[in-house]
Image (cartoon, rainbow, N blue to C red; front, top):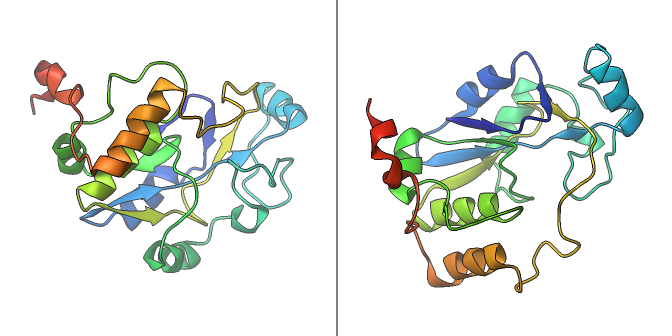
Length: 189
């Protein structure tokens, strides 16, 4: 299963990259090339996305892909996916095995509004023994510019979603209470 956001333009090999780097017992975490406002206007007017370090993008923002990774290189992507992973978890470019998603019961539907739902899901996957592999130099996607709804402090524990995320991490939760199993009719194969 591959997750993307609706404000993303995908490289033609995006899905193929997820498939090529998928490995049992792991989920994949990619990034996004953050377009500037002017580049977004060009793209929305019908321009073709540029998947390269010279694209008009914001490469220094904390939640965007660094310029170093802004081109597709499958050999480097395979090497990076084997390395110890780090970086920010974002569901805008993420994939996992169906069985792993069902085992942790999908997204925690007690979460409302913006933030932490992706990090909380990744924490439950990790608690269940599913390792995260980084997607760098692969599964490229351009993120269209828009105002962010993120809170100034994404780790603020006064926010209800962050409290759920914190509990998942500190208590080793592997399965959420209210998740995908409440939609059993959709789980028919």
